[in-house]
Amino acid sequence: MSFSMQPARAAGAPSPVTPEEQRVRTDLAAAYRLSALQGWDDLIYTHISATVPGEPDHFLINPFGFAFEEIRASDLVKINGRGEVVGATVHPVNVTGFALHGAVHAARADAMCVMHLHNTAGIAVSAQAEGLLPLSQHAMRFHGRIAYHDYEGLAFTPAEGARLTDSLGAQQAMLLRNHGTLTVGRTVAEAYVLMATLIKACEIQIGAQAGGRLVRPAPGVADRASEQLYDNGAIEGALEWPALLRKLDRIDPSYRD
Image (cartoon, rainbow, N blue to C red; front, side, top):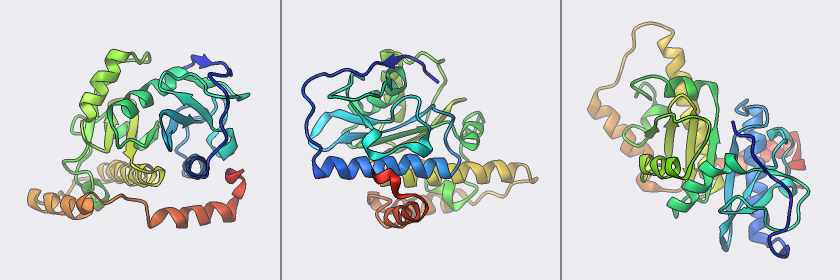
């Protein structure tokens, strides 16, 4: 949790929202609403950020003080890589909360969307010495493809940003020890679906560990399953995302506003 806020202010004239930016705004607002429906939110804390199309140093993030369940596309605040508000807005942003996201966006050209959560099962597995175990098909998606970063405290510094991105490397998923989960996506949909898979893997692990002696697949089986589930690096979420948006539209389409 971080509490430093950037007050609403203009850093240059506001620009009209392009159709491409509106699409990302809609997808990002949907990711917040879907996360709330899953119970992944943590009061008003944690963030999902996305790069503005055609503006590589501009990002969209939730206004600080809003619950995930009330985010709309128009509520999302545009900021630059330093966490400064771009254009006109009435909403503050959590600058120190964006610092982690900003470091990943800057280090990874493919990090169009960065999703960081404090999900209970994810934190529980992050606190286990062995980390994520190949106990389920969901977990085997990340077998040999997940990073870890040791906890360094609340204050996130540029030096830690460099260490965190070094820990992340080229992976799309990370367990932040004693802290939470992080996924990187080439689209909002990919970051969300990867997070859903990672959280389910963590929930299965916690449940299995509570039930007695564990059965693990042979190492070769886990390796093979990981390759099959990785699907040669195809962008994930393309099939799932339209169905998830239809679900939201049935429940409450106001995320599109």
